[in-house]
Amino acid sequence: MVLGLNCDFIFIEHLYLTLQFFGRTKGFRIPSWIKMEITLPNLDKKVWQAKKADIQRLIRKHHLEFELSRDPDRFDEFYYGMHVPYIKERFEEAALVEDPKDLRDAYARGGLLLVKKGPEVLAGVLFEYLPQKVRLRKLGVRDANWQYVRWGVISAMYYFVMLEMEKEGYEKILIGGTRPLLTDGVTRYKISVNARLLPVIGGTCLWLRLLKDTPALKDFLTRNPFVYFPKPNQPRRAIFLNVDPDFKPERIEEIVQDSACEGITGTDLFVFGEVGTLQDSIATAQNCPLTIKPARDLFVDQGGAR
Image 1 (cartoon, rainbow, N blue to C red):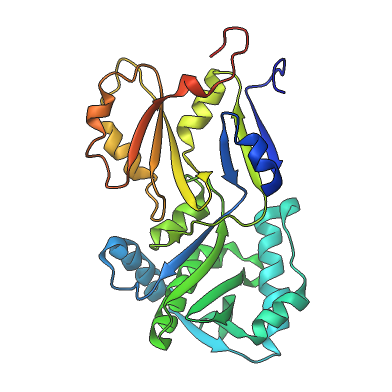
Image 2 (tube, rainbow, N blue to C red):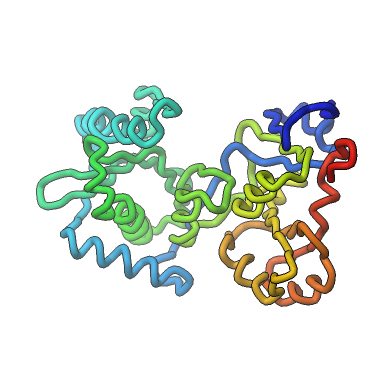
């Protein structure tokens, strides 16, 4: 299937029915999106207190407040004045604008949390109530004004939602999808507010097949740990590590911690170079089960290229 291709790797989009075929080959089943949630109460958990303090500082500095609204007339203001401009600015040609009818139905089951500075509404998030849970559906920033983003309106949005939903007694906040790359800015941000990865896949997946061990591919893989699903409902983390003569095994713990994510069931460390005694160095690297494997075993033999 892949012999003779002049490329370093291939991505193949697949559905559940094709998983059985791809599962017989070496590779990684990577979801197009991973889903995350915040377990309440969350505001007093120690793990993210430094991040919370930073959010609170921005809220005080820019005098941000919030308002809850279920007024049907506020929907158009949010959708056309905040959500659509923001995602078009943020994602440009890749922006997917959801039908306002579907979101209006969700709004009827929930409401809007609006971030304000005085009487002026700067940003908002549309949410809907579920049993014991709240689902954040869409967010937006007034006129896609990036000055407001720099003021911290999106961080404030998450904080105010937690504040309100803890008060209302909800158990979880579903905060939507994000990219499976653990270096992605949005993914890292959600992790920073103590969100947890859900062990589910929604929609399509990508099958990543490594073909040739080249410097460019090696550089990409070592810079981008990612989430993949070797088995249903068992998300794992793949970290690629380049071990050269100057590499210090003590760095493994730091490398693992840099892409830490609650909810993964284990970590696979794929090593370019000699595995050697690295196994002894990872025994105490993290509570999450961690295995070490040679990266060369993942590549298709391309006339000697490994």
